[in-house]
Amino acid sequence: MDCYQNTPFPEVGMNLDDIILINKLDQSNYYSEILEFPTHLAEGWRIGQLNPLGFKGLEIDHVLICGMGGSAIGADLAASYASYQSLTPIVINREYDIPRWAKGERTLVITSSHSGNTEETISCFKAALTRRCRILVLSTGGELEKIAGSTGVSYWKFTHYGQPRAAVGFSLGLILSAFAQLGFIEDLSVSIENTINLLNNESSKFLVESPVQKNPAKRLAGQMVGRIPIIFGSDYLTPVVRRFKSQINELAKSWAQFEFLPEADHNTAAGIDYPETGGLGIFALFLESITDHPRNRLRSHITRQNFLIQGVNCDSYLVPGKTPLENICAGVQFSDFVSFYLAIANNVDPTPIPGITAIKNSLSE
Image 1 (cartoon, rainbow, N blue to C red):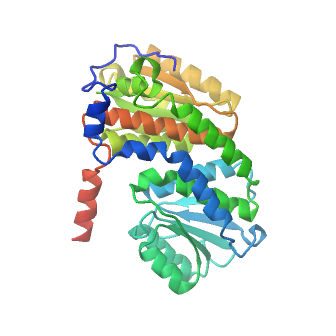
Image 2: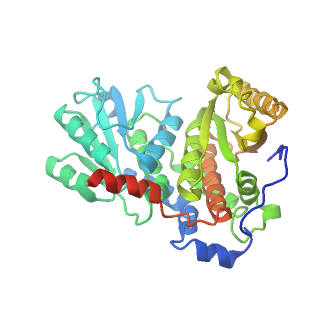
Image 3: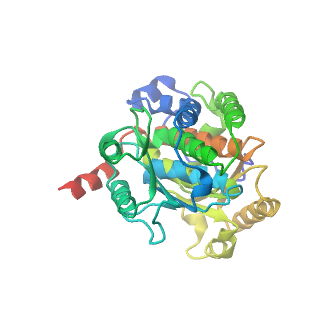
């Protein structure tokens, strides 16, 4: 990190090096879920490799992936990786219905739901079934497992008992495996192994045992306390910054936003004058990687410098890794650790999501 912030760190409400207090606050042990991300990625890939789809990529003209929350983020990450290789369009759908063009057996609809009970995803499944699309279901069970079994569509089941947002490794690995089977991307067996090795090596920097002075995730969380983070990224990291935002929301119970480069330089960069951003508590973080387009790397630097001149607190983080897959996964891992420590600094349990639960309960009344 460049540590470009203009003002001193806000006072953190909790000692991020106090392991006893961290464990006490993290009542459901969400921390262990973050550590399992590499294992989940490997298992998702393995499950997909063991389950042939029964059709070929040449038989598919379009792919539509339907999901919400953590399940949709896994799809975003996989689609981002495949976007520069696949000749077949891949679209992510976060709605109750599917687009009009999604019809017939040359459209593959992947419905991804951790519980198998997500109402929006079930609705999309039924629409795809009515329109005679090819369907692949990803879930741990639930209603989607039952419907898939009764209709005979392809179903890949995985086992995970934690929060859906903590299962992103499964959904990413499963969807990448499907893409590889269909020939949309290359075989990633070696790349998955290399990525897991990178994640395991990098995670040592972010563990609770690593003190703030040596822990980039803890330091960045400290900079975010009392501020509204806006996460910027480009190219393969665009879904990572979206994931970062949602993890800050769900773990730290904090407001956050995300922006994409170069698009942000065509609108967001003009919106920092009124009201004066320096007094709004905004904190802009720019995620970068070596696989970013060179012009986007330059844009990131110039945009950050311009924000600093305007009084916006800024920092940057170079995501480790030499390949797009390594960058994507390392970015997810780092964002999860930062969001966890921000939750601790905010003195909240990372696991419960009362705001989301209240809305779901109201919808079911």
